Length: 240
Image (cartoon, rainbow, N blue to C red; front, side):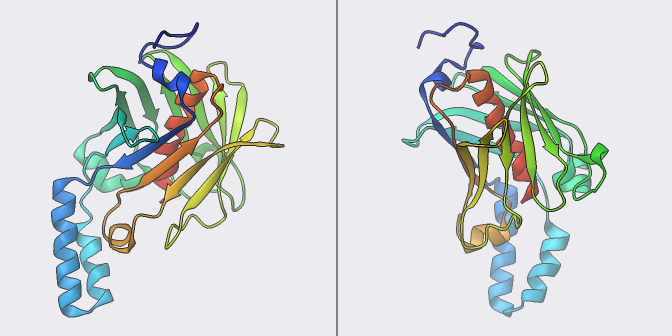
């Protein structure tokens, strides 16, 4: 499709859609380890064994995601770039760089998240993510705002102006159901979309860290803001 004025290269398709699905790929090594845990736990009928094995075999690999349209067709692919030490030692709080590529393997969006503590009451430890498109050109930010019990974020443009807000539920638990984060207007008076962490089944939820997300936004939303909202998924996923 022909790019509208101001559309970063590679994001032309995003101007024509109002939703995306993000499906994490289960890495072979993580899958093998998870399979061993399941078999041993079934044979022993021991929940304690599950906790013990999970603690000692929680091996993290670089995350990879398929980004699909509502028909299930892959339109982008996201790959985390991180070192082994950070993945194993820092877990979900780790910093990362992530490339989002089109089906021709061209990087169209780059995400950058600095190291931040989780569940910290200090404002300096709140989560944030920079979104670039094309890589090297900042188009927006996703920043956590302080709240005593709700996960809340602001979506900002390149100038640092808040254009949307995101508010999640008090309990970020996806056990037996979806978890929804509301995408609100900047003044928080109207809902304009949502980000959903989708339930993927008992075994997958318990024994892997693979996640499925859906995102909905207005069709006529600025494509740079759409790209920033897509980036928000990869910040929110760290809360699960």
